[in-house]
Amino acid sequence: MTAAQIFFAETAEPVTLPACDQDQIDSELEKHIVECGREIELAMARYAASSCFTDLGDAQHWEMAQKQAVGRRSAAMVLKLETARGLR
Image 1 (cartoon, rainbow, N blue to C red):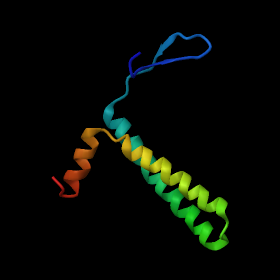
Image 2: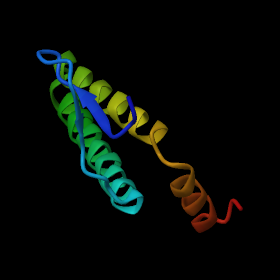
Image 3: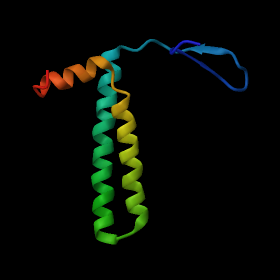
Image 4: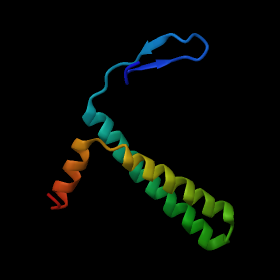
């Protein structure tokens, strides 16, 4: 099975997904990372106001999602970000 194929559990037959442009994937992933950051800030603001552990749990959920998304960055995107920040 390639990265562009998935299997449906019911049929166990591969389905080929349309090819995506890596720049488009990187762009969408960066948007998701920013959105996760906003959700973390909102949840922490709610937690600061309420001291409700559910709000803290929400912040932790979004932090985990953000960390996973950062880990999925392509090598090209990492290089681009490091170059933009003067790290390379």
